[in-house]
Every structure is written in C-alpha cells, then in structure tokens.
Length: 593
Image: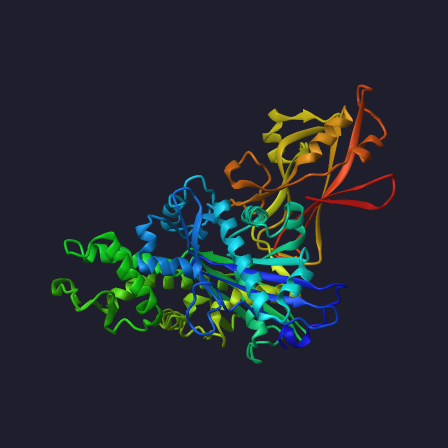
C-alpha cells in the first residue's frame, strides 16, 4: 500500500512545518506539510509564485535570477523570465544566472556547458552566495503562500517560527561536499541561524530516491508492489538523469531495498537547448539571424513549444519566433516561422536518449538474480513523448515495462522529499564508494606487500613495528548497507605525550577511495583516488588525561588510547562519529562530526 495509507499521526509535542525545496537546473518548486500533534500529515504544494499569470498559478518556477553589475538580485523566477521576454533585463544589462550545475562534483562527466556557466556568476559572488539568494527567495515565496492560503496564516507562521525543518533534493551523483555547501547556503539565506541548526534541521535526499517516494505515494500499480519485484526510477530533469533501482521486500507496509549503486548522467533537458543552439548557429551562419540574440530568441521559442511536444523524427517541425515580416526562404524561415525536419530536431535529443539507455544497462548489470520488471519515468524531461518512445524502443524485447506515473511528474522531487521525511521505507542501500580511514598498520613479515615496504618501517612507542600509508577499509563499494547498522573501525593511538593524542583526534577523517582496486590497502598507491569525505572533531581530553602510563621497551613512558570510527547510513547522508570507553566503564561516548 502507498505510505500515505499506513502513515501514523504525528507524535511530536508541538506543531512543526516541513518545507521540501526542489532546486532544479531549469525549474524549482516547494512542497510542505504542517505537522500537528495527533494528526496524519498531508502533503501540500505551493502553486502560486510572483509573476505568474495563469489561473491557479503553477507548481514550479524557472531557476533563473538576474543580478545588476554590483551583484544585487533584481529579479527571480517567473518575474525574471517576464523581464527577459519584455527586453527590460537586456536593456538594463543585468546578468542572467542559471547556476545549479556549477555545484556538481568535478568527477561527474559533464558537458562543457557546466564550466561555461561558472564564468557567468556575478562579480564578487560565489556559487554558495547565488544558491543562498535563490533559497532566500524560495523561503519567502513559501511563507507568502502559506500566509494567504491558510486561515489566520500570519498567526500560523508565527506559531511555527524557529520550528521549521527543511528537506532538499539533489542529484544522485552529489555527495557530502555538495550537501555541506548547500547547508552553508541555507545559513546565509536565513533558513536556519547557524551550522549547528543546519545539521539538526536540514535533511537531504537524492532525486532518485525522492522520486521513488513520489511514485509510491501516488500509487504504483498493485502488480509492481509485490515482494521480490524489482523497479527502477529514471528521473529525467533539467540538468541530470538520475537512476535508482530497488527491490520490494515487503508490501504491507511497504519496505524496499536499494539493489544497485545509483546512477547519474549530466544529460538533462538543458543540453537539448545547447545542441539546438549549436545547430542553429551553424545553420543560420551568413543569414540576418546569425546574431546570438536572435539565436537565443529562436531557442526560447523552441523550448516553449516544439521541445515539449516533439514526438517523432518523421514529423516536420515549425518554430514560431518572429513576425510575418521575418522571411529568409534560403534558411527555411517564412513569416516568422522556421521549419526544421524531424531528423534534425531528433539529433538534439538523441545524446540524452543514449545516455539514459547506457545508464539503465549499467544498473541492470548490477541487478543479480532478480530481473528488473518495471521502469518508472519521472521528471520534467520525462514528459517529452520522443524521449519516452525512444526509451521504450531501445529497451523493447527486454521484458521491461516502462511507464510514466499519473500526476505532475515535475513535482516528483518536492513531494517525494516530504514523503521521505515522514516515511522511511528504504531499509537497505548500496555503498556508492569505498569508505575507510588513513592509518598505519602493524608490520607483518609474513606478508609479501609488507616485506616490499620494509624500508619504511617505524616503531610505535610500545616498540611494535609498523608501516605508514595504510588504508583501513570499512565499507566496500557495492556492498549492501543496512540503514540501522553501524559500521565500525577499531583504532588506537600511541604517544609519549597525551596531548599528542588529543590534538591528533581533533581531525580524524573518513576517506573515500574512487580508484579501480577492489581492495585498496595503501594510500601512496593511486594517491589521487583518495578523498576526504568529512573530518570528525572529537574532544577526548578528559578520557586521555585519565589514561594510565605504560612502559615501552626502553622503559620510557607512553600512553595508548583505543577508540572507534563509527559510520551510519540511516538516511541518504553519511553520519560519522568517534566512540571511546570513558572512566573504565562499558559505556560508549559518541561525538558527532
């Protein structure tokens, strides 16, 4: 059954507001829930934003901002697009910013557009500053909507002040660094007062998993929700294509496990526009329309009409961009309409189709004995019929059913993020990478690799021989991670001076390995493949000062401190802790990062 049918009443002691902010590459939206003690929460959507003229508004706004040359925000969202269409933004020489891809990890294989976008940020503005400006705008829009859509809205918001949680979706390929930058932007935007509050009140969910929750909430077919059925979510958005695969482990209440490392391809709908732009520059070269502004005008018209309804490569496409006085038959332009063949337009979409098919096949190679039955295609880009039909054609004969859930697929991430906040149905995930720590290891003369490294032997204060540059592996890439389980590495530090131990444990790091080895052991092999995910800062001074002195081989005094690094993957965000025994008791003291 969908999570909503088994959702329990909110058991908190006071009213709370939860805002789900879907900041997309092309469009953004907000869903929210007011949690009242004893009542079952309902998912609501902000459907009205400044600058919208359609009746009832819309559930999304363009992820666009205009800045003046001093870096001051002049217009955001639909109001920004309105000023672009009227020509006022160009007349004022404001800087247009579409920036979300700039946050991507450098390791993601992205087309050059993302690097080009970096140069378009306003002077003196970092990507965190720009993100903060946009988050501040969304927060204001959410409060204004709640204020007018609910009875006694002002009083309602006052009662919720300081008791607002946030959920933010992000592409599958983003990780801890991007989440931390988003938290900093949230603090700068005034969503929360400081980083401590950001840690407590902001959660993150991948867009793939949020889309799973959306599909579950909106009623997947009963045939799909059966134990051992395998489903894949393909979330096709403006910047990225996110793929996540799951197996249903229990139907009532529903529980699922992730069965493959989530996929992410930077081949969303914005790249259709980029390919269209490149094609038109070449096609119209030498015409009176080869000016960049004219090309941008044609592409904007293409985006609003043809891009959304294009269906097949055998249809002729007409892009209305000008007046009846715009004529250039040599270049296929008549009475303000440019004519293109379906084959020409299909080339704008095909690289994205190829990227999706390749990513689907990569997910399937990880699927094991249970075969994939169903793909649910969601996201704004998924609404395009050509993309949908091509994906069906490419996977024909595989026995996989491909469908688009009912409802507004461009609301999938915002609504799904709220369901994620309230109903955790994913009980097992797959490790995205190798997780471990950098340390030293006791020298073992019986191991060949140790003998090869004998030139770097050193002695711990206890007199035992050791080797530097070791990697203690805690979680293997591709392994299943139970969301309730803790993953522990037992470590120790020896030193002549207790203060050395204290200072060393103030910056213990969790390190990821991204190389090709299936069992990495040494950090000086492929050193570029080791990346610090987070630093755990722990105050162990009280415990260390209570350590009993020990005698080394030359009767020198030294101290030994035993501790643990603990990893937990309860939600989609890694949590890391240091744990140790204090006051000679069995109680473990946890200190979060």
